[in-house]
Image (tube, rainbow, N blue to C red; front, top):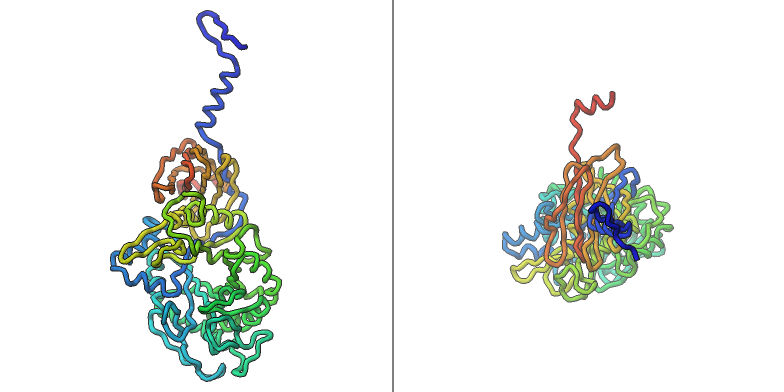
Length: 485
C-alpha cells in the first residue's frame, strides 16, 4: 500500500494518482482525430432522392406555402437537407392513370423508322416543376432515368411486366429494331427540359433490369445494355449532348451491378457513372471500375413511419441511414447516395418527408442525409482520417471551396469528446469552426465547438451524428507572393 510522504508541509502523492488524473483529463479533452488532406479517395457527386411515379404531383397539391417548405426541406443548404441530386423518372406509359408516368410518345408512330410523334405537356408528371425548384436552390445534378421503353418498342408490347427492347441481342420483333428510335426518344426528353432551362446531366435508360414488375419495367442483361449503349452514345454526340453522362444500369442490388461490369467492357468509353440499388445487396466494398459509382435507390419500403433518429436500430431510424451512407461512401467508395422518394403521402418509411393532407413532416432520415449533403458538397474529395474514439465512425472530406467537413456517428450510450486537427494540404490551418448535430431532439442544430491553435474540440452526444465544418482564411494575395519568394 502506497502512503503519502509529509515533507516540509507538502503532501507528495504517489505516481499512480497522477497517472489516473492525467488519464481522466485526456478523456475529458477528447480523442485526437487527425484529417490528412494529402491522402485522397473518391470525388463526391452528391446525395439525393426522386419524386417519380407522380410523387411530384402529390407535392403540387399542397398549398403554396407548404410546397415551398417541402422544397426547402429537401434542397435548401441553409434550412433543409441540402440534397444535391434529383432523380427523375422518364415516362413510358400511355396515360397518367394510377401513378403511371406518361410517355412523351404515348402511341407508336407506326414503326421504328417512322417519323416520331412526340407530345410534351410541359409538366412531365410535375417533375419539371420540382426540377426547377431544385435548381433555384442550387441543385446542378439532374438524373433522368427511364424504367422502361414504351411498350410498342418491346417484345411484350407493354411498358410493364418486363419484356425487352426490340433489337438488342437475342430479341427479335416483327415490328423491327427499336434501338435507334428509343435513343432518339431519350434525346428528345432531354431537349424538352433544355427548352425549360433545366439541364439534365445524367441519363439512364433502364431501371432494375433484373426484375419484372406489374408497373413500368424492362429486362436487360449487361450485354443487352451494351448493345443499346452502342446506339445511345453516338446519338447523344450527334445531338450535341455528349456532356450528358450515360448511367448504367440500376439493378436491384450492388453485387448485381458488380456482376454486370464484365459485360459492359465494349462500351466503357461511353459510360459516365455506374449505378446500383440496395434492395438485394447493399454497398459494402468498391466495384472494379474506373467510373464513379452511385447508390441510386434505397429505402425502408414497408416499415411503419418512424420519426426518431434512434429508436431500436430499426430500418427506419435516422441513425440507420446515417450508417448506411457511411458504409457506402467510406467502405464502397460511392460518389453518390440517393434515397427512393423525397416526399409523398402514406404511412411507411419509403420517403424522407411525409405528406398528410396539407401537413408536411420531415423524418430523421432526412436530417441524417442533411448531415452529409449540407456539408459535403458536389466535387468534394474524401480524405483520410484517423483517431476516432471507440464506437464512433468518422469520415472527412475537403470541399471545392477548401473547407473540410468531418462526420462523427456515435452509436454508443455515452458522449464522446473529440479534438480535430487537419494536416497536409499545403498547410491547412483552421481559422473558423462550426458543428451541427442530429439526434432524437435536434435536427441539424448548431452545437458547441471551440477552436484553439487550429484544433477544434467538440462533443458527440450518444446515439447522434455531428458534422464539424472547418475553414481557413484565404491567404492575401500579397502574402502569397511573398511566400512564393
